[in-house]
Length: 283
DNA sequence: ATCTGGACCTGAACGC
DNA sequence: TGCGTTCAGGTCCAGA
Image (cartoon, rainbow, N blue to C red; front, side, top):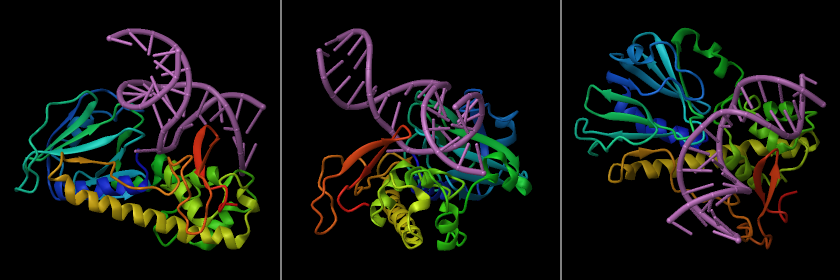
């Protein structure tokens, strides 16, 4: 599912339930997701207080008072459900356990956090908070696209000489961390760049223009996620996907939304994944 | 060093 | 109703 905006939305929804609270009981219902869980994960989590809930790229990081950080990744199909009644803020009854509820946290407040992931491309791990930057999954990540380290000079240089299509380059988490298939398509549309264009052959000025396009794309999506968060209490407590309308993603055959453009959105396959773009205004 | 394609896994949607 | 095929928001890894 989840690209940076969805993960950030999950983090924001989870923060009021987890930050400052203790995991009274952690239940781990299977030995692994994409990889085996760390040794004794349930025991190491049970009783720990969550000090901060953070995000790096598509990873949610929970810093615990035990000195460890819990890393969570939602993979393609991961979802998180909040249920229970914590201080009157969350009022969903605990639903019947569902298939693929792999990890469950019962917080001291009474809230329950359930991690469900049918495809099991997700992951969890524990590491010392002090050295977590060096964790294999985090060490090689490029800059956060909404942070100060992601700027025009960085992206221009990172794409210099690359022969790969810009679509693939922007999916490379070492160049910029957190973009996935949807938001790369959307950002390229905003920048009017064709997804098949070789990264290193895009003019420096156009490469630079990608930076604000990426930022705006993600910022708008996070805003849409935020508005969905305001509703989830009345709904079912599920964090993750939210209603968001895309300009190109999933719109094959539909008209381009750009003012004055009469193009029709096209779908192509690049390195096994769908790319959507307007052949008229993306070059 | 780069780049591509296969692998991991389940479920939904679709055509017959 | 059932069966086969295709597709899906990620990313690691082997091999060219």
